[in-house]
Length: 114
Length: 110
Image (cartoon, rainbow over all chains, first blue to last red; front, side, top):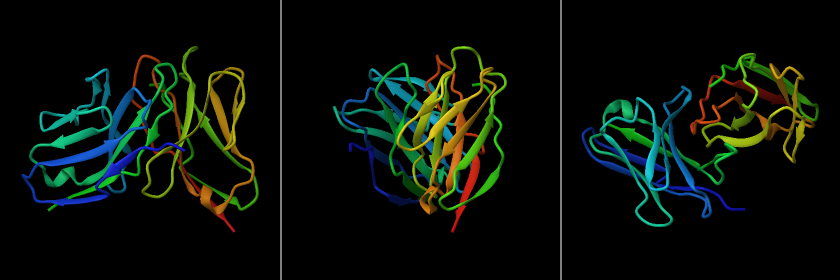
């Protein structure tokens, strides 16, 4: 069964450093998402991406964040200058159709900012 | 998104049916109800969705009341691996994002 994959599973970085989190969505999916979950808190939406552009973003997704689909398979989230409060689990998700909001999530990348 | 209300936690005996309720009294006529779950620290997992008719798939059944103001997710024979947080979500049709509330923490006990 096709699945969303994410790399790395755990990333440790120092405050102020740039990180890139990588995702490979399911191959025929058209809509792509990033969510995050701070330890013990709710899953929060960050950004959605369709047709090579951002379609929605939350207040969390400020100028420090960017997304890219550099080729036909990868979908990346970049944090330019990490802060301690960026420490969280980051989940990538994808879905196929526009009508039904059936999203498939990856296993997540745990980002630890020290 | 229409607001949803779920009990914070529930217990269920292994092998018995788990019935998880959700209130969504402000739902509008064309909004779907979605259920997802999150097993500890894993990515959320889609379970099922419905509009007005009851739905069943290999994972669960979804019962939606006639007035659509509430729904119940049924896991017919809960196993220990069904222990998770279950989220009832009513996203805007025009929207893209899923808004996760607190959900119901289901504990399946032997």
